Image 1 (spheres, rainbow, N blue to C red):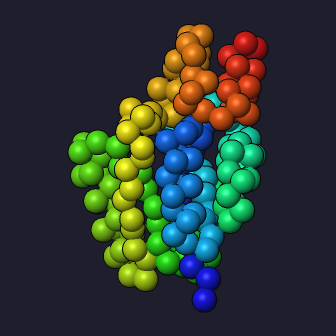
Image 2: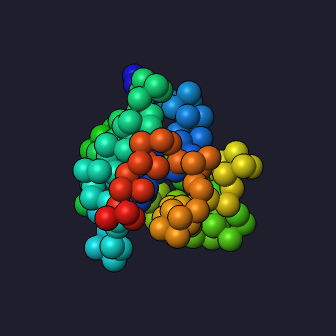
Image 3: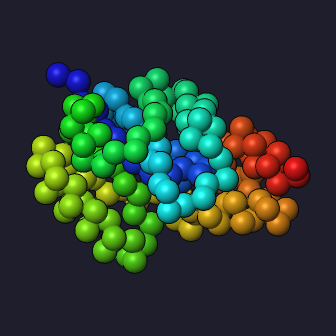
Length: 160
């Protein structure tokens, strides 16, 4: 039986911290699916389609990673895709409380799903998509924090 893990998030945009976690999780599971959340409370820089394209481009070498979007509860999406687990990044102790609450809620909504919390490599511990966008918008060098394709798209958005 194939084991699928879901990596839910906004990924606006995907950065090397996300990719580091996806790389390691993809080695533990048969399939990893980035579930790009459609969140009406956020105003993303990139469209859902652009985010999926960036994810798939950045992870194409892994061979068992794909991207899709969902407007559903992650627990329901996991059930529909027969996923066995969710993966979430945990950068700081301050992230733990939120991630713990989400993991418990997802478990109550779908007891068949486990949540795995994984720390990114130390060199990416300070990254989040908002910081990446803010630095890029102000002309800072983010080339060591995002794949080349993401860098190109960010530069294109902010030079327009």
